[in-house]
Length: 113
Length: 114
Image: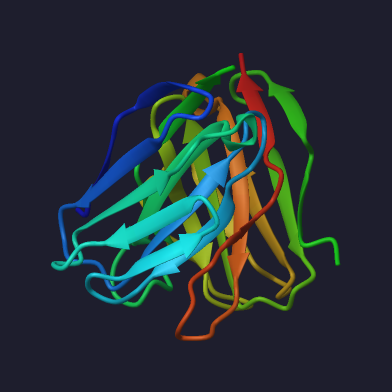
């Protein structure tokens, strides 16, 4: 079945440093989504990428979708304590996405003040 | 709008007991999902529904049953709980736009089976 792999599993940074998490799928994806989960919370949708090579920015967050639509990355510039949490990438389980998402295992971002 | 709500928030069961987790959404979404989240495993899809009266199996359906009698509710049942079902359960829903696939998650139910 489809697999979505994410690295690193944990990332410790000093506040103000940059952070990047990488996502790779075993199959070509029609789209990829990114979610953030704060400690003790639930996943919250950040963004969806659809086009090959697409780059989207949200303030300090930059999301990229690979040319082959099998990989993606999330980059945070100048991390802040509010960025703490686990970042998940997710792709449609199969077909058009009606049947749920396959999530990566997530990257835990830990920020040291 | 309350969004997606889940009850209960916490539950402790003994092995062999049964229970039902309730998910409700007030956004008139067609699609609803149940995921479980275990440490280091990310979220895994248990069952899903694409509309009232329909359900389908996800990645890890064994030991669970679901029902969607009303569009706004999606129930997850454990007939005979096992310690391996200790997990955090999240319900999610999404609109059928054919373009965006954003899922809205509930706050979760933390279940412990002893």
